[in-house]
Image 1 (cartoon, rainbow, N blue to C red):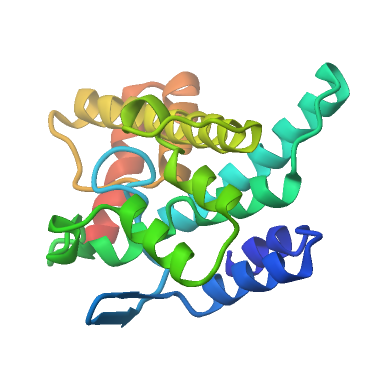
Image 2 (cartoon, rainbow, N blue to C red):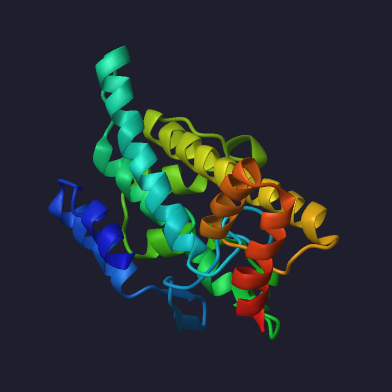
Length: 230
C-alpha cells in the first residue's frame, strides 16, 4: 500500500512539495522539543474503535481520502467550474492523519489503545508542529490543521482545506458505518461481538447476510475471524 500512496503523491506537480511529502511517508518521524522519534505508518490503525480500527487501517484511509480528494477536485472543475490547487489537496489528504501512528499502540489481545504520547498530544497538533518544522507551505498546514472542521476549533477557510475535510469525513463515515453494520450482524449471529474486524471481512459479512442469512454469517466468523484471533 505504501507504493500506491507514493503513486498518488507523485501526482503533485510542484517538485519541492512533492519531495517533502515523499520524504515524510518514506521516513516518518517527528521532533517535538527534546523528543525525537521515527515511526512506521504501514501497520497502524486510523482509530482505536471507530473507522479503520484495524491493522493497516491508517494507510487504507489515507489512500482512500487522497483518491476522494482528487475526485472532488475533478467534480468541482467539471461541474462547477471551480479550480482547486490539487497539489495542496493531495498533500493535505496524504498527511492529514499520519501522525496517528505514533499515538496508538497494539495491545496483547490484538486490539489498539492510545499510547503514552497519545495521552499528551493529539495527531493534528503533532503534525502541524512537524509540518512547520519542515517548512511546508501554510496552505498545506491549514488543510491539515482544519480537517476536523466543526469537530475542532479551527474551521477550513480555503477551498483546498474544505476538500480535504469532506474527503476525510466521507471515507471515515463510510468505513465506520460498514464496520458498525458488520459488528451488529456478528452480535446477532453469535450472541456476542468480536475484538476486531477489518473492512474486507465486514464487506464479506454484509454480502453473506444478504444472500445466505445469519447461519452463514456465524460460520464465516468462526472460520475466518475467530480462528485468526487464536
